[in-house]
Image 1: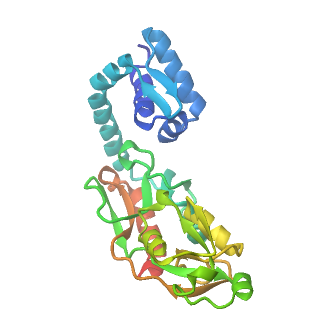
Image 2 (image 1 turned 120 degrees about the vertical axis):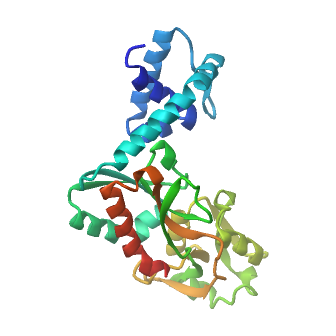
Image 3 (image 1 turned 135 degrees about the horizontal axis):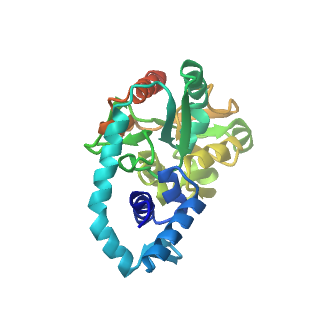
Length: 294
């Protein structure tokens, strides 16, 4: 094949990520580029490597055989690239930072601005979503995420976990009256998280406490939960951010029991810790976030 490794890394990315969008994100290219590269590879080999199904791209028999024979080579090359990146001592270039939508939109904007002012030569690319990006596969350089025990190949700075409190919009309280939770939950409306957010202790606590409510809306993301609460649609357990972070019209009703299970981490792959720009970025976000999670 022409450009053997270039084509192979596109093949491995799609085999790992199952969709063109996620494969493109891991390679930092468009999904159309992934599609074009894979079609060229299939034409050159004279076999079909993937089938496009309702759940994503799945390997054919030929694709599975190729994966078995090339996976180890791909892992070795990825490790080599990470180690070379770790030797980079420049304070310039791109850094891909992964975090959740709610943190990116509520807590981090002012910190992003400070970062740009302090390190104008560093281009920060933010990847948001509930899906945990794979730092080992270079889908991101740094991740800000909750974790109980990060994998041994990841290192970083640890802070206290995200705490939650019960909030409601002042217009909601005016309409439905004072909230004495949980004993009066039958007369109130609640916005709760669905099972896709089952990693959060607050989700399970709310499910146990809310019994026969007047109404429930379930959502699959923290940012949606915050926005619906800010719109006055019900009571919700939200991250207990400082007053200046959340809408001033939503009022704190009560604290939830403190979570001891997960801590907030700023993580990177161990092969990247020697990179000066990775070290500086990790330390910058740690120092900026630490006051909120002390």
